[in-house]
Length: 572
Image (cartoon, rainbow, N blue to C red; front, side, top):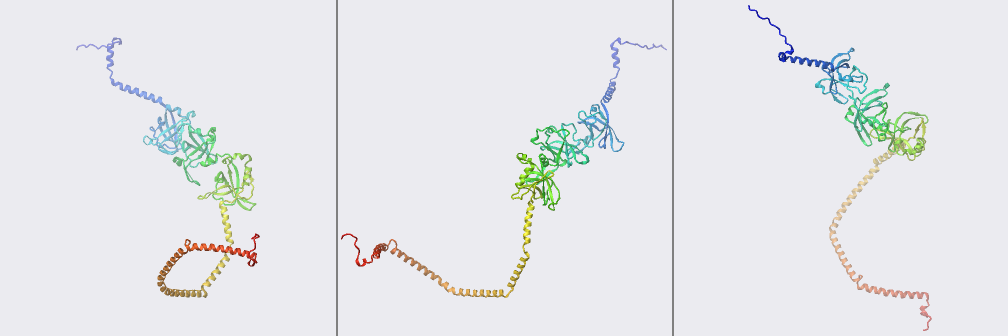
């Protein structure tokens, strides 16, 4: 066999040349780049996951409806800040505990005041929310606290319903005190001049449930319109009033009809008033009318006693003076009056002098002196109808002419004004007086007299005298009929000769007219006979004057008839 040479290892240093190094790198396959990049990416993801990993928190809910471990997310402003890891029952088996891994950026938000709730499709506070979860599934919403929200917290109790205000919206919360909550609910709107400017956040029940304190949030800039003197009232539902001006229907909005609502108003007189302190509790009035009445600050208590019915009179009914409202009724009772030994109704009411223009000029005399002066002028209180359809009544203060003298009194610091019967009472008194007069009428005697008269008439009708008179009248009528028949028979020939007689009479009248015409022509005013006659009459008149003178002469001198005419005293 031939001896083969042994292989020898040849070691080259790096200094031997670059050509050999490039040959060794070329022996590495490019396929190794894929696992290397994969390892690098996996390492980065692991590092990023641990770097972004935030704290683990637990949230207790009543149920886990819609949540899924490993899938459901925690969001803030639609940004994912955590993920649900596990869902387990609590130890009491009445709640569920949801474990959530939060992101590192969300750690500063996990304070004691932070709130969590499950977003799912629901109808709350008058609006539908969470419809997007029908596709994406339910998730947990985080509402962080405002600045300085408290120390960090890792265990939370989730809300059953979402809060009315999910974010720190600028504005202010006011406390309103009411006797009852009524139809106001969470999320009920707050109105200012018919604008929706806020919501109801909730309420607190006072001790023994005597009142309710409502938390009403008003958004900026409308919160600066709430001043000292601003008035809030319940604007829930529909207000329907039937008054002298007709039917009035008032509705703030459809949302207020469903959820209830609150409205407030700031009059021009208090716009420059200071702001309300944060701890001030404001009254919530039952209606806008009650809030308007509350603007009157000066009230004079008064009392009047009535003996007629107060049916239809209720607390809050108006007190009017000649038709103008000046106050309202507070209430009434029923009491025994030992002085008159009868029952009476004391009605308590308030008079608001600020409703009377120029009343400040008489304020110096004081309410008692002013009331005494008005009573002397005839001021009286009486019940009057406020609405004929509903039967409501009111107190009317009127100046009664010729009123009986009366004086006012003061009972426990309350002015007692005299009263007179109301409108219906006066009408009933008149009716009673008429009925009393009718009752005093002698109906029995009238009835007896009428019965006697009717009996006499009946006797006369059935008596023989009336029958004989009727027989005589019948005989007279028969005789008259015979006479008429005879006259008719005798007048027939005369009627036949009447036409020629009329013709002859007409001819005679014509001849007489012609005769009168001839006489007028011969002896009329312009005839010769009339002129001759006038001259004859003048001559006769002259002769008569001569005879009158002769008679006067003989009357004075009868002897002149023998001696002749006496001499006149002249020479012949």
